[in-house]
Length: 116
Image 1 (cartoon, helix red, strand yellow):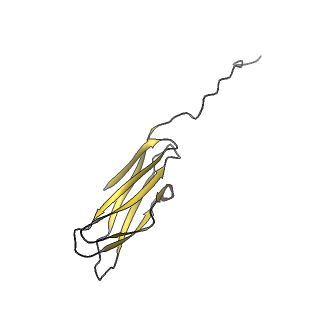
Image 2 (tube, rainbow, N blue to C red):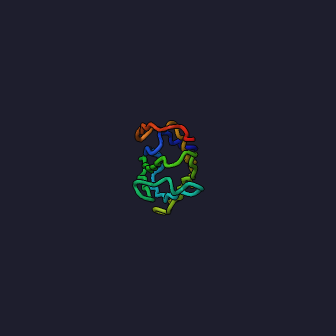
Image 3 (cartoon, one colour):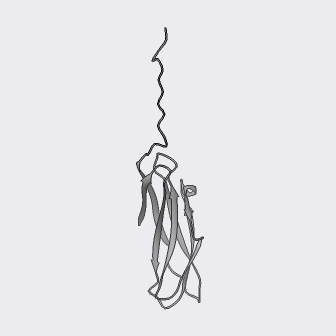
């Protein structure tokens, strides 16, 4: 699964990954970001998520566009044992795409092109 972050330079984009627990036991996951640009992404609500039985939980990922090149990382969710039950390990590819650049300001100046 790939989660795409699109936006303008210096914009911050927040995405939520929804995790469903169809089972009868509580699941707990630890989240970690790895890869070339893992530092560019952050987990807003911490590195652990608990999903009660028959409910859903969310992992919130934030990304701020600081560079012109695309950023890539991987979100890995590993299960922690709760009540003797362990869930499957989940991975998500995180990718950014810069859509446009907005100027911060415009500077006008008048000067000769060259001097002899």
